[in-house]
Length: 593
Ligand code: ADP
Image (cartoon, rainbow, N blue to C red; front, side, top):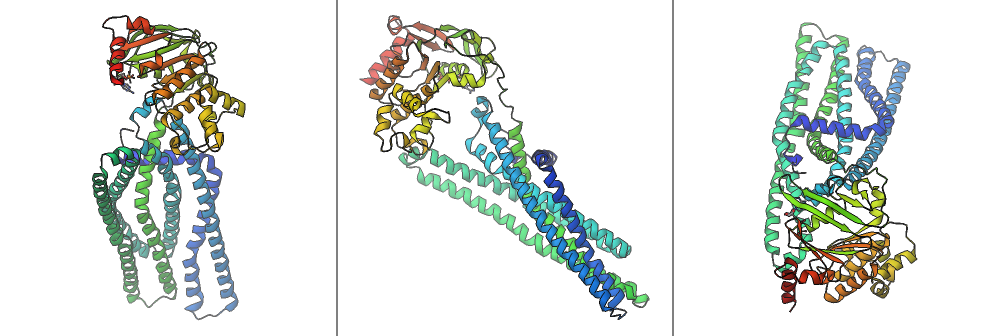
């Protein structure tokens, strides 16, 4: 994620990524793809015959003035049938292609999303949400563009070019050489177009994603934004980005307007004039051969046919550019290594945790946890406290397997953490995060979270979390829609709901990550009651900023610079004169007063 493919200018890498993505998307569709290609070839081949039939009619019947109606009629009927067949083939091929392209997008999108869900938590430390969203939803569309606009237009153009080239070669190879002079002129136009339009396309894409990012950021930070009256500043920055985007689009449009149609049409006319001129030169010496009028007719037909695909290819260029960048981003994301699956089959039974000499560092040389040694009995209640940055969240992340702990250092019921089956682990270990994460769904759905729980289980979990009261008081009870992010509930209620959710899984171990930081004292007491009720049944480990939450804990673990500095019951820790816990506690009491 750190290297934005927008900055990637290595065309070979871009093309390689696009090819890999196409192969990935095409493999399951290879049968449809094969048929679509076969039909395309047939249609293009049939179409290439048109000018030849015309030439034959002119040279054999019109010029010699031989009105053999039956033969002419037969020929025309044949041409008509071939034309109809070609049209039908094109239609069938387009439908098939569009269908398979959309199915491929669908599949790649699912694959990318599934991949994101399996990425290790460390990935999300550096990921930017807006970018990830656009990887999954927008950039995967690149697959369709690559298929429809690029692969097929190119293939179509190549077949038409080859067919027309062969026909012209067969008709008159010297005239064909004149037409072949089109190639360098065309290459020049494409290069020029690429120079002018390429950077503008890249810039406008970049600016658009910055516009998106700013909108997303403003929405996420709306309360702060409005409270600090920063609206005007945001508007000004947005206008600036928007203006730059406009300028880039303008440049892109100018390149299109100048180079695409006008230049190519001009080239077409030039070529026609050249062919007629050469034709004239050659027939000046000899009297006009009867056969040659037909050849000229056929050439004019082919020239029109040859310039069209070239125009198409050039026009697709900016699409190609965007699709390549999109494909590269998708491939980059797909290359991120997934969390290795926990194929292990170990289980959590009683929920006892043992940590032996645990050291951990996110980056080598910067230890975050050092020599952590502790045993938590099943059903016990432990609090973790300490200054910001002391390693509390890190310890929890390791216990939750969000980051891989050194093997064998953490055991649950004697089984090494890494030897416990993933599904079983997530089933038996619950988490109540600091920011309760609620879906825009009903209260019931928010507790069940897709697990097959019946009503009684949902209600029992809500009761255990002391959430039943306020949920029942909502106008539709458990079926009340909570709105995005649970907008209809207070922070405390959201937290109780999050606890109900964690309990509904019937966990043996429950982790709370500063679950009481943002709630009022009354709700905190409710949470405390809920936790107290779990005693003896569920092992509870709670990080608490607010010390009253863990006052009743069996033991409180005080972390300091990644080490356990103090350990004991509230009263024990308060007895240590000059102790960290005692100072923290006194400080908080002062604040409360
Ligand atoms: P606490 O939860 O006690 O505030 P943390 O466990 O969040 O402490 O942080 C402990 C140390 O680890 C801090 O110095 C912090 O900067 C560092 N840290 C935390 N998360 C990461 C991460 N994902 N990558 C690198 N360093 C991190």
